[in-house]
View 1 (cartoon, one colour):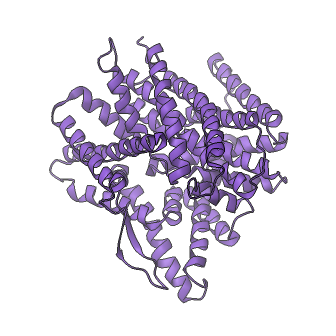
View 2 (spheres, helix red, strand yellow):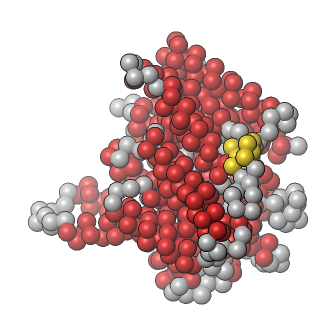
View 3 (cartoon, one colour):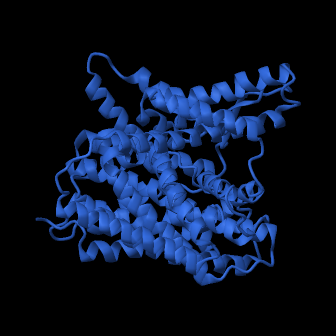
Length: 526
């Protein structure tokens, strides 16, 4: 059988990983953003292997899987840990403890992604816009013809557009056609080819619930609540809205847990002995989970019970992360980290250091899961061996974890700390703010129970919650992309027009992703 995880794939993947991980850490701390590196590393792996002897699209797929894995690990770390030093600049975080929790997060993210792959990718067939874009890029490079021309023309236009916006400042990042008032928030668009492409790929159902959540949160809940005296002003309404959205997302996670529990209880027991292969797999999974608990208990400030609860929390949040990434292309990893922390705070009183450790390991696992599932989606479409691809992701995730810690500590030493004009680390600042607890508990609980009910009714409550939670400018551009996709889909030749729209959207995603990574690398070098 043809090997997809080859020695040259590992070597090339790791070399690319070093650059992508370092630049991702920099851009996450400096700019408060983390552009998906998926298409950049796809093109990089194509350039490295296209002329190589006996190379295949599947080998390129595994190579870019290794390259990209460290980026989201870096994001999970950058979005959480700097908040510790914002609250206490003199706090000491032992480097080995930091490496331990980051490596454990990477391993668990890879493991749970492997367990969730069949359900989210094969059975539910979630779109995973970045994974589809990577697949389209690889296929277009092989097939050539009009499809390749469409995709790479779109990609080139997106590159030029992003340069004009981000590098040369000729295009504004936000457009605000409707100015807000004391009652109505402003309506604005994020001028982003990538976001519009995501809206075009995810389909009308997910787009409707995402954009519908934003309209409900900003233009129904906020003005009606202010008018009725429930909120004093827009700021108070924003706190309620954000916590309601978080509750909706976590309610989905609770629904997943309840559904899994009841399925296990109600499923008829089979008397026949399980196959040896299944038993061996279960033993290996149990061994990895036990090792993770031991490492967290002995190598960090977490206690044994905290580590056990943390493992359960990581499983549920990685499921949510994989589902949301599949439906929307958005992965709010730091939010998942803080929510698992809040649950653990109900049963124990972790120290400040332990609190940020919990948030970080969850964010790392969820960040890597989002990346893994996108790569597995493109691999599924290409016919890549999933075992070899997951092993490659695990290798890249662990190496990226160690490198992320080194880069984080080096930047702290070089820039003198975080929360400054040079390294604002806005996501970590938000995590530091939320370490004390949920800002609006009633809103969170309402969202929790509504999200649970909607999930049990098979309504995408997490996607709805994401629309309620995120800024309106992100949801609006996504909605515009979905609307454009609907308008340009021809009824007479629906399949052909949808394929062309998919290629154009993939190019839009890829162009901005490539340019964002290049700008980050150049900024880091400067």
